[in-house]
Length: 187
Ligand code: AMP
Image (cartoon, rainbow, N blue to C red; front, side, top):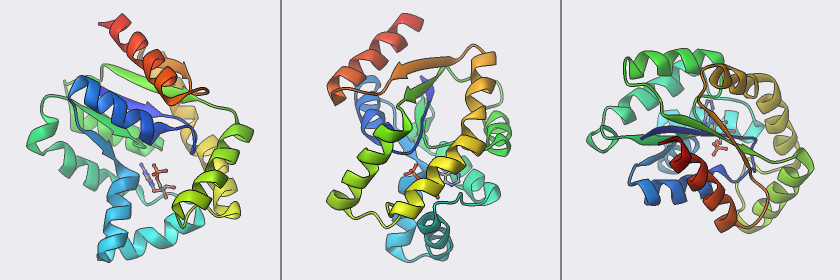
């Protein structure tokens, strides 16, 4: 299966991506995780990405598209994948379309959660994990950037008949079940 998971920062994409990856035996590919790994290793990309991520902005499309193209070319992604946090801009949608060619996506999961709820979750995560982009200001910027840059992409995938909207509120296992039921219902 070739899947995307989308939703506002704090909706629980990473957690659900892991569950989907295990259930369907496909790699979960998170651009945020790839950037964070580069930050940790102190690569030139990491140095550039850290500045942008800490401010709550988006890393440039060319860099991001290149990273995803390389990752999708790896052996484990040939039988399917779940992209978490990509695409986030219209330019990234176009780049992904090109990467996939005739291999259409099977579904796009939209994890829904209201802003108050996600901001509360992100504040909690800031306390627990100490992610440097979970400051109050970066949290707000990320919500705004999501609203303007990324939420319009949901319409694109809805128009293509790929969008599955799932309520992201509730227990983690409950949300996973909603996703599995919706995905199994399509196959
Ligand atoms: P995430 O872990 O998905 O919330 O991503 C953390 C941060 O990494 C984002 O706030 C962006 O700064 C950067 N990032 C992740 N994915 C992308 C993407 N597809 N395009 C641009 N920036 C991204």
